[in-house]
Amino acid sequence: MRFEHDVTNSKGLCISLFLAIAFVFVAPVVQVKAEDRVKAEDPVKAEDFDGPTFRKGMWHFVRTIELVLHEKAKQRLLEREMTRCVDPTNAMKATFSSPSIGNCISAKAEKSNNKYRFSNRCDYMGPVSTVITVHSDESYTESNELRVGALPKVELVVARRIGDCPDESQTSDASPVLLH
Image (cartoon, rainbow, N blue to C red):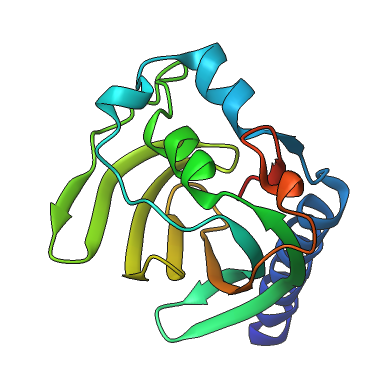
């Protein structure tokens, strides 16, 4: 009898892991112009933006997504790196202008020292708790925690400016950025 119970739990865990992995790899990586997203949603105008600002240039991003299996156990589902010429301030404007979607109500960011905390932000993953830690105008980390549903996830983005762009025209405000 105990053996049957253990097999059922193992099947449930396998199915959960399969669904989580399928979600990560099947869900497309969306690239849009950050300025277009801010213009479309427009709740935060450029002059009203009270978030962090960063230097334009060549930036290196490392994005990881982990499935939270237990309080002390996580399973890495994805790790991607990208280097490109961007103005991360535009992406921050888009993050700070996250609109409410359906039952998901986005909270305003609360600033404390070098951290911006959103108790709730409507993201492509669903309602997330977000913390953006600004190390300088050339470095930041963003952590998004999705705690609802059967498969809670943690997404971490580590961003660092690594230099100037080869051609400064590549860092115009219309530069495409990877939304995370």
